[in-house]
Image (cartoon, rainbow, N blue to C red; front, side, top):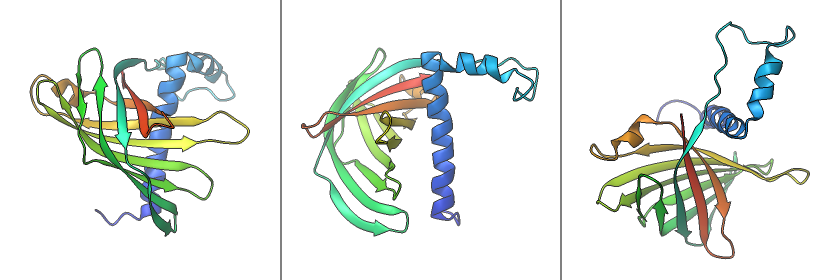
Length: 192
């Protein structure tokens, strides 16, 4: 990679993820509308007169991904490391459908504060044979005194052709465990 140290890289990735995921979630539920109005107060308003336009989301697809058992990889200075191999699955949405290919993996870091950082890299094959690469970075926080937080920012790379519209959007997502089955449900949304 580069000469960037791992903690700085993780912090930068976390800040980017939190910004995108928080904005998308709040915008999709309308929660930022009140914040945008409150932000216009003299105490903490925006820095410019440019109107705040909140991003919206559009459903792209959901995937059910099948997994192998977790492989513990030991402690690191950043926390416990794990890997979970991806064995397959399927995905479908309004404009795209196909199967999750085996061979990908979900690398996880369980931080000392209980937060889990996931980085799943895998391929999906559409019904027409196009192979799409997905890099899904998830932050999961399950505090004892609050609701579970599990949101991601997702990089999708598609070949030129009918699916190259995927190369022109930013994506966020949600993650749900389907235990006791060895599966997860991933929902993907584009920012519009």
